[in-house]
Image (cartoon, rainbow, N blue to C red; front, side, top):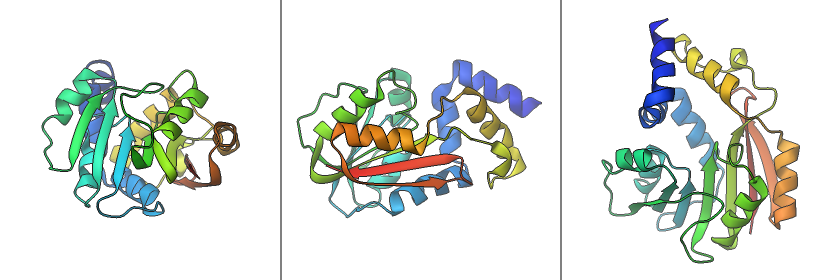
Amino acid sequence: MRNHLRLWWQLAFDRPGLFRRLQGLDWYAAMLDDWVRELTLAPGQALAEIGCGPGDFSARLAGRGLRVTGFDPSAPMLARAASLSHPHLSFQQAGLPQLPTENCSYQTVIAASVINVIPQPQDGLREMLRICRPRGQVSVLFPLIDFDHRRSPVDDASRPILKLWEKRARKLSLEQVEGWFRQTGLCQITSRTLLGGNVGVVTGRA
């Protein structure tokens, strides 16, 4: 019960703390690592993380030699991200569908649990494509329609977090997001599932 109350308190009053707590969980970090493992990433590559939250994943990617810019519309999230420091890491307060950056600025553009939150997903994908370099990659991660926390391979202590995600998140299908990718003009589209089939990933080339 205490764990549930803490989750609801963080959701209401300390969302940066909740997102940082998520990043510290082994299963969540492993899910993100599994997501980007199949992307074409190399040291020195410019990468944009849209909806970076408190910046922990952006910092991990910068630690792998990528030049990372994290974008988030929330000032409290970026205030928490300011505690992170790396010579190849920067943050900007902005969100989809309008980012303050030039066309073709990044080789890779990623967004976790963003495309299912914004009001106009197609507009958001067009903006991700705009800032992506030719033949670069755009990839999104999102909860799936048939999300069921009971089939996720997590420890019991993490189960309340998954229940919260299942209850509160807007969910999408792989086919729906693949269609948006095609409508946006992305090509070579691939999709797969993570976290016991609860989370989807769709990736395409500019």
